[in-house]
Length: 315
Image (cartoon, rainbow, N blue to C red; front, side, top):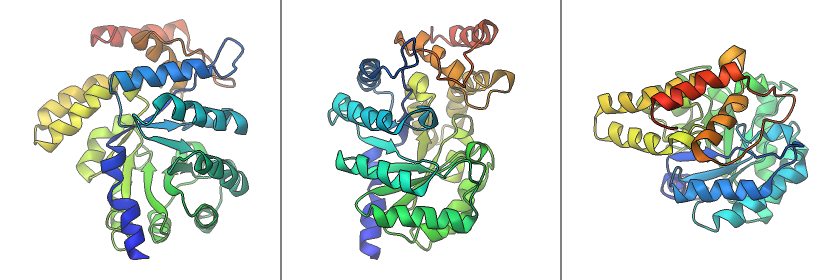
């Protein structure tokens, strides 16, 4: 059992890298998924080498606003477009354990080895409920490596370090993506909670704004929607930190921070409404507005974000 666990976790960074990019989901004017544009976006990201791995239907991809069938077709589109040039991870978390298992099995059928599974939303389960949720999925999908996804600001519950420590004992639960802005030191708590069960447990930060604080704590990489724009800078930040050039890392980080902060104008928690047109301006790829109930960006909001993008030389 221990050897299998080591095999599942030790080589993650080697295969999937440090920059995991959750793909924006493009829509047409009727809010229908535009699969051709999705493939175009993937081609752009691979050509520009803005990430190490592509994630289908994460929070940035508006997974909670997509149907089951749309999420499956996006998996298929991503696999075909990537064509082995970048690994693909599927976001398969749903509100119920049953549906999460079904979607994870669809990913497995298509050859996706790792699934990122967000904690179940709306129902606010207890820590024991969260443990049983993930344990049941892991047992039902034994050939899938599971990356836990903790984002309490959206799901309403936090995966506590003690719960993650228990889950780390399960062979095919290999790591966690933590939206670190809620609890900036929780990355360290996760390391401490999992070190005995799995010293190679994969811990990624999922908040662009928390990139520097979580690198210091030992986060292995970043799940970054901002990498659509700042993939090269993020890669340079990791390199600068590894060689001890903290001033360079800070210099590179400030523009990322400014743009990401601007996507939260007027109390927006999910940045997509502003992030989507920002990505359009940089890439030239038409992504469409976010799906309702997300309100589109206002002219005033985009004036702020576009001014920053111009100032830092992105447009």
